Image (cartoon, rainbow over all chains, first blue to last red):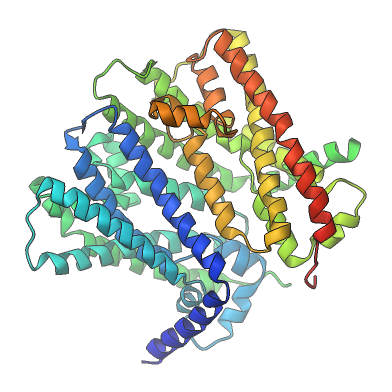
Length: 261
Length: 263
């Protein structure tokens, strides 16, 4: 209960600070939108030259992309860990966090949340509706719950991987260039997994399970029955990923010594 | 001049201290490029050529553009923005060197480091398992080298420009991010500009972005030949010079307006 009330207090503070810089908020939202437009333009341009991608049509790929944007937006709103090293380790902010009687990871999530990223889910839903209606997909009442479950699974996978990457900073006190590249790799989960060589398929499924944030869950709605096994594995993979990352985090915090400035 | 060369060296050595995490960087680059390769194989789907490029050329294009990016990429815009926000810029401005010039050579030091410790080993790793095609002519390699240098200059100039804008706006995270995505999209990094519709290609002729990634990658894949190589290099050189003017102009205006908040 304590955590819930802290969450809402942080949220109230957050709203106040954000509304102070309204122009910046707008530009930030616009730049998020542009980030998505880059990928969308890529897909549209590519499908201007071909009709099928390994048997998957343009609308199916668009649908996967639309689906992906929803967990990605939720992830972006709560897990802004990409500058964790700079901000918390190098500048010593971690010391401040650790003196407080609240889980350190939870505090950082709250401090760094960017609720406006949630808006990024809107284009995702629009793309899904557009592609879905062109594909005339069937829709059941329980699909809403399946959707929510799969989105939560996806968010946990993303969170798990990026928390794990952030914990590297506890063990090796060096700047790392892995995070931005990881964002690139994460985008490959949005394409039909069967286009890749089996090594990459294996990596995207079991090592860096980004395929569970895009193509696997989306294939449930696309009625691709050959992937159904993976679809329902999504929440499990998410839970495992997240649990492992929290364990790594706690191990990292125990090793943390501070930079002494 | 000597102090700038020294700064390149210092940045290089600074990065060298952190070299271990570049080994993982190489691996991640390799996975990234390999995934891109399969994506493009699926897009080609058996076609022997698209927009005048074979799959082999496309593979090389993708690999080289990502590895070249490691060289020309830098975060000068963010660094300048952060120094303005922290007030460190005040100290920088009284030092006996050109602030922007010093930033640029720092970027060069980083770029050179990544060229030797990320791009070249990365290229070696990638060429082990991907069918890359490299030109045999020394002239193509020379043109590519020159083109890559221009890429670095243009990319850095755009970053300095965006950084200097921070003097006027104070907070411009959004602008910097938007700039990054525009460069990703229009520089030819994620796909060659020749794939875009004609009207988009014509529009891009008027922007410096294609000079960053498209031109060097087209040169190394020999998709540009003869006069096209020369024109590409000329275009890059022109942008290198043209971009100096807005930077100089904004910089003079910025120094007058500078307000250091604390520090």
